[in-house]
Image (tube, rainbow, N blue to C red; front, top):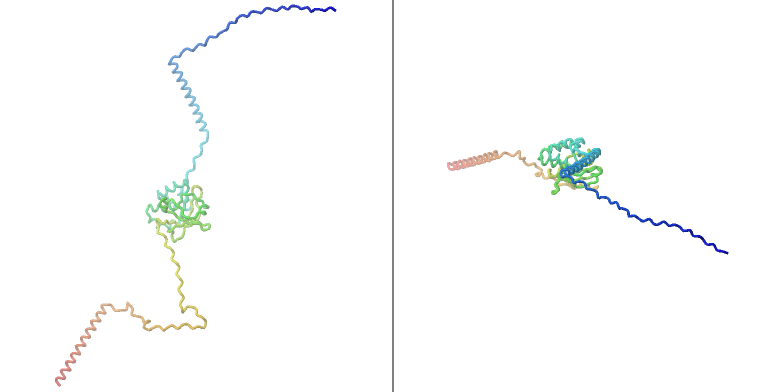
Amino acid sequence: MPRHRAKCTPVAIPAPTPLTPTRTQTTAPPSLPPRLAPATMRRLRLADALLLLLLALASFRDAATAASSTPAAPPPPAPPNVTAEMAKGGCKAFADLVASSPDASSTYQSAVEGGLTVFCPSDSAVRAFLPKYKNLTDDGKASLLLFHAVPVHYSLGGLKSNNGPMNTLATDGAAKNYNFTLQNQGDVVTIKTAASSGGAPARVKSTAVDKDPLAVYVIDAVVEPVELFKPAPAPAPAPAPAPVAAADAPRAPGKKPARRPAPSAVADAPGPAADDAAPVDQKKDAKKSAAAGATCVRWWIAAALVAVAGASTLG
């Protein structure tokens, strides 16, 4: 069987197109601005500085506006007036004494900010004490007034939990003077020193003020410091019972009492009283009269003897 051959049709291949070199477009470098004159540069710098100043002022104004819109914190409360609180609480007489002493009033008011407890005597107690108060010097008066305050705020419960000596506004830290003893007897708070009048302590009667930093308690007596007044004398001991006499002693039933010796009549005879004795000058006159009488008697005896002798001679 005959074989068929495939016919190949020739394909025309286009000739390559020759490449033409492309021209590269180059850009020219940017041109620099012209150089400014020195005067223009100074004006530009000044304008920049003014702009910065305006921006700073605007920011400061905004801050001030924000601060003014925020409410300010309230100022701290003023410290209480000590003498006014004492007067309102029933211690006007003592408050007047403190106000009349510049040293005491300034010390009270400056100490209240750190805490203060005042034991102010009642008006009746101050009136009873005024004669002693007037005899003190100005320094003594100021010390007595400062002696009634403690530089610590004590509530009534705090007082009842304390016993022992306490320093006062008059206390000198080095000498440790002008202090008193606080004692609690049940619910009663007392203050005592060695010079307490009559040895009795002052008692806390009532609370006038108890609000931190100030507490004011009314007491029934003025507390006397030993630095200004003599210590109270110690109470005398009670007398011992008299011994029972033998005659007064109880005797056994049926036993006769001992017979006492009869008193001597001479011993019981009353002697001459001093007022009944004769004066000294009368005693001298009596002695002179007795001597004169004795002389006269001797003369009469001598005359009688002479007469007898003469008669016997004549006879």
